[in-house]
Image (cartoon, rainbow over all chains, first blue to last red; front, side, top):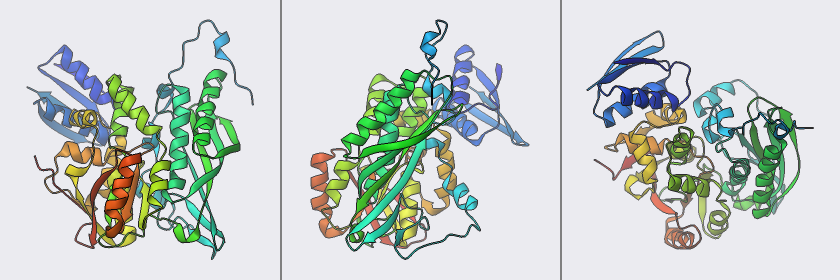
Amino acid sequence: MLTIDVKGLACPEPVVRTMQALKKDPEGVTVIGDTVASRENIMRFAAAKKYKAALDEKDGVFTLTLTK
Amino acid sequence: MEYKNLSEDPGREDIKLTKLAKCAGCGAKVGAGVLAKLLTDIKVHTDENLLVGFDKSDDASVYKLSEDLALVQTLDFFPPIVDDPYLYGRIAATNALSDVYAMGGEPKLALNIMCVPKSMPKEQVHEILRGGYDTAYEAGAIITGGHSIYDDEPKYGMSVTGFVRPDKVLTNAGAKEGDVLLFTKPLGIGILSTAARADMLSEEGRARMIGLMTALNKNARDCMVKYEVHACTDVTGFALLGHLLEMAQGSGLTADIDVSRIDMIPEAVELAEMGILPEGVYRNREFAEAFVDAGDTPLRLQDVLYDPQTSGGLLIAVEPKDADALYAELKTCVPSAQRIGVMKTEGEKRIVLHGCAE
């Protein structure tokens, strides 16, 4: 499972990179990011594609793990 | 001012305008909540002839010159929302002119405001301006000058001056209980432009987006001024719900919205579900959410309702007895017009959404 860092990227790049990572490995991905918009966009994408999403947030940085 | 012509450089690649922009179109707008904070404690001077200032967060200021003439003044500009410089110029001008229409006025004079990187080819700069001029002429306005500076991120827009009869000024705060709410363009422009930045937009979607953003609100304005309209605003960066909230708050009412009547671009709804949303959606939600009873409205439709529109349609509150006639006439010149709800007496929330449960 890949881990990608989308900190500092403007929308829609974080969610697009998440999609690309899941194309490489459809089992799941861990995304590290730092904006509400990127977090929410990725959560919406996960819901649409029926991935489970586990969220951990600390000091303005989130770690979102999507799994089948 | 001279522009370096990069076309003389054999090694150059065409500059993709949207790659130079950090935020797209009206999505670059500073959030309504942030703006209110920035203006705190600043003393605002006024004048007895100032009919509309920024106390009710309206689209333009209006100043009475005589008993039958008032000046409408506005300014709007933003970074590139499309890569084609001519279309970018057209969109920015359409959007700037729209604020005058939203006040019920007719635009007459316009000044360009432009920021360009030193490296931008002069042909591209020329095309942006050509788009602006063509659009201003289409609106019946003339461009009389402007101001340009160098900046790493391109920006273009206009300050527009128009005229209106003082007794015909339409603010966003004049709606009355029972007024019917009409809206003139489909929603989802911001989402489509976000998808375009990720090369995820269909050709049809792109054509639809450009068509909407370059459509002047002139016809809608010319149509509505013949009827008893109480309030009007153009829906731009704060999204339908943000602008509707300002109208409801300013008028001391609650807007009752039938979401099933709102025309949302189907591709934008699909993209919303996939999380292809601009940051502005979340800014707008943060600003307005506490005042909205979203009921059972699905998240993807709520997201479209919070989508910042660039050069969006007019939101019109019309006297109930005139609603059928105005709606029928609007449909003939602005086929995308929709009848989306009514203004009701002030309730617990400023906006109530219904009609679209899963």
